[in-house]
Length: 179
Image (cartoon, rainbow, N blue to C red; front, top):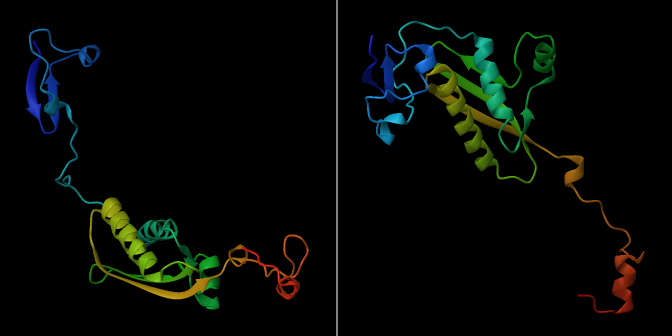
């Protein structure tokens, strides 16, 4: 059976070729235009149904949030942390599926960063991750910044002596002009 070339979405599909011939061009057919070789992403969802558990959705949200720059963790009270350690809940994230996907998150942000910008970045990352993994949009996303996390290395130590072992007070008393 001769190979029949039929256009398909995003490329050309060769019908009637043996697997060993798939990498080669048909000798009677000119090469396809360059635009026909670009792969496409399906825009329609396949027929069927898939289910995602609450835990899977929370894992996607947690990974997207903690991967965002400036987020140091989720804020939770001690009881919620204990429940999270026992595997009963995910502290700092509340998920409601009754009216679409509704998320409430309590975050801690690293000290010294613009809080509003970190929150915008988290919102964008979470919306993208949910859209990409589930194919659905979030109905509502609420981000509460509960506190700032100060890293021990982020605060410079107080200098009692200068590089030459001279204190700032001694340098000021000496009358030396230091640039």
